[in-house]
Amino acid sequence: MAEENASTDRRAVLKAVAASAALMTPGAALAQGRRDGDRAAIRRAVDAGFEESVQRIRQWIALPTIAAERLNIEEGADHMARLAAEAGFTGVRKVPTGGVPAVFGAIDAGAARTVGIYFMYDVKQYDPSEWTSPPLEAQFFDHELGRAIRGRGATNQKGPEGAFLAALHAFRAANRRLPVNLVLLAEGEEEIGSPNFRNVFRDADVLAAFRRADGVIIPGNGQAANGNAGIELGAKGIIELELVASGERWGRGPTRDVHSSLKAQVDSPVWHLVEALKTLTTDHGNTPAIAGWFERVRPLTDRERALIAEIARLESEDEAKAAFGVSRWIDDLPWRESLERLASQPTVNIEGLVAGYTGPGGKTVLPARGVAKLDLRLVPDMTVDDCLPKLRRHLAQQGFGDIEVNMTGGYDPTETPEDSRLIRAQQALFTRNDISYTLSPRSAGSWPGCVFTGEPLRKPAGGFGLGYGSGAHAPNEFMVIESRNPRVAGLREATMGYVDFLYEMATVR
Image (cartoon, rainbow, N blue to C red; front, side):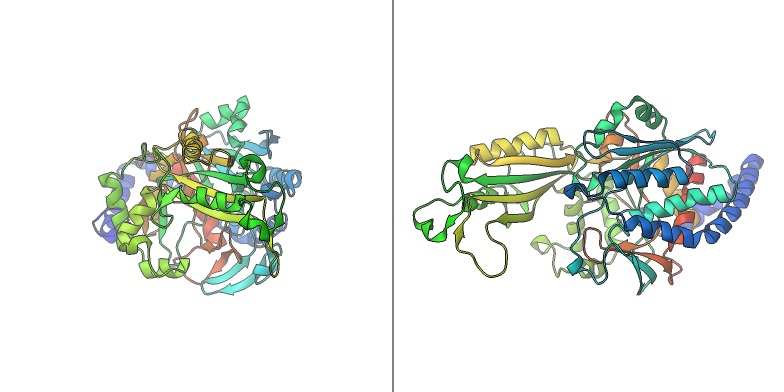
């Protein structure tokens, strides 16, 4: 709960207000009764379709689309289109973006309101040798919270998206009409920074459909292991890029790998790259030092600090450290201050360094080329268009203008108003189901929600979902399918969470 007063007190007040409103408004009471009857029928359909829903997720995991490797591009888009059509979307088609195609579809339920749905159908790369079980087999295993599925995409995002699709199948099986209209966009390049996704709105029909939406969600496993949920009012932006140093462009060092004995005589492009990297940050890599980088960084507001203080009060620092495998935060900051830094600070991160020989043993070469893979997280009011030129100018001014800056993807931060229907619907759902939750100013992670929150749409957008999973981008990624903890949703409960959310979006004022 985001306010300072006790969550139990607030839930009691909200429930009392809701009950008295229903008593005073016969139409509302009748609508609630009809909704409860529909929900019971839909829950029976969810239970009846559970095994089919599990298999749908497992089959999807077995077909990875990996944009970075150009793996299963058309196959993945076609599979996504079939999933959408089978769930009831009409007019389903692939939309060209200039890169990996997006998939578009809509459901016209004749409702007064429309909700936008964002899916990603691509996943991160994987190394099978690092996994306990083959990452595409979606094997079951016993997790401390219950029965789970392990596989690439299990929690990011095919498992939660499968739960949303299961909700739509349940509406159809129960012969119940959706309370809202839906418009869907599924992207195939999210895991490489969405370099072409914005182009989808060059399609007039797609743009018109999403202009009708009251807001956009990306399904996710939104619960912690203790059952608490989080609502995020935004997300950081990102620039993903490669810095490439070469003897050819530098005009010094070799144009091809040479014997390392020549280092006494010949410059090293890889050391040149390392020296360039050193200029990008101070404080052991913790503070960006790119000229002008903080010019547009907006400080946290008093309200945002209060939200973070409540998160620090309700969430366990020890559990967070254990989950990340760390023993201390940057500068040995206390828990609350570390969370403030997480939400408010831009970052320059080295994802990987590639140069010379990296196989078994040694190989005495002086490499002619080195590559650094970086991601730079952006906070409001930073933009990609402002930051990327600053990086190029900084390198040139520091004497590294020869180093190539190849942006591979990226987008701006997102922000969604706390009083938007999208946020209030989630709060109403959590309150109605007695789920403790927090409000966060923004996620430190990134997703291309700026295509919805920015021009030309300017719609509220963010993540939503019940359920628990972990290991995104890492080995042994998983999602809990059947939970032993009554406070943590399994697949059935997560599916019903989307059912309830759609009803909340239809009725919230």
